[in-house]
Length: 398
Image 1: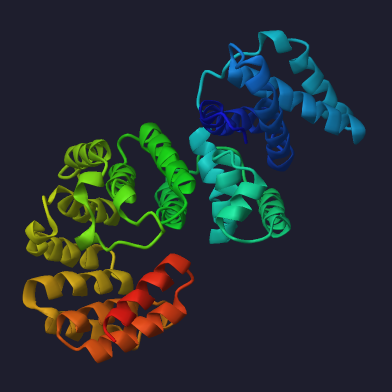
Image 2 (image 1 turned 90 degrees about the horizontal axis):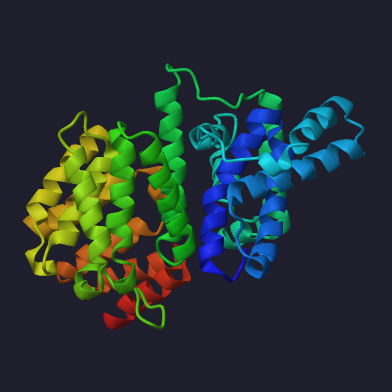
């Protein structure tokens, strides 16, 4: 948006608030979202030169409403024009809204009528305040393609007749699950190499936790992000080469993020049913609090993965439990558990199974077999950094 990090952060924070006000007033999500994006662009150009206005949210709302007025005038929409003109007659008195529409906006962007990629793109655009170009760059696709995806998502919401309001109580748990899943996906997309995308996911997770302080899994999600992101500085060498967890320089880990994540988790666990985000956060906390790799409490991690597999079973959980099992009972035990994933179709399209198998075979003293696994994994991964790392591991066993 702008070269000023302070202004850029402010605009990202205010984007969803401005959009929430406009959608509540006018009801047309697609038109309001376009208007807010133009207001954000105007602010990014004007505020660095003229200074941030006394009421930046009111400034954005006013500019966006003018954009709506111009659009509706060009379409001869008399009724909407009159409503908007009445608002703009008092533009100088526009103030920040008394209530926060951010939660309703999050639920709208994660509407069940949208596909997961569309939910994510729309959340980044409407709630995160990212431009279409920024989102396209994050997902390595052309800007025109992302623009079409976002446009189709807005039209889908319009066709579905989605209301700008919190879903009924009966639907809320499932809709909240989707919202958290979208934020988790956003974080996973960014936590390896896109620090800005990971930071945006953390910001939105903070927002969700603030708006729903009694939702234990929302707190667990935020704790998981913080405890994982804390290792960013140690996760790769200056040349981009990945550094495995056991070899990371722990003095580079962000102590403040670890402390915040652990404190948040401590306040959450024991207050109610434990969900998958809380359990993953607890596992991350065990890693982060270990003074060294050798002092990691793998038995506790193995026990937590056992609970996680019961609460939220899946091949990725089993994969990770196999590593913990290998650290506790030896690599052969881990390899035996990995064998249960051979017939899982979801594992056939990812490099993870071969990467973990290679690691355990290496620990078991089978360098030739480990090398072949690393090579297969390197061919399958979409990440250049992971490909280079796996190729290096294979080369080291030649």
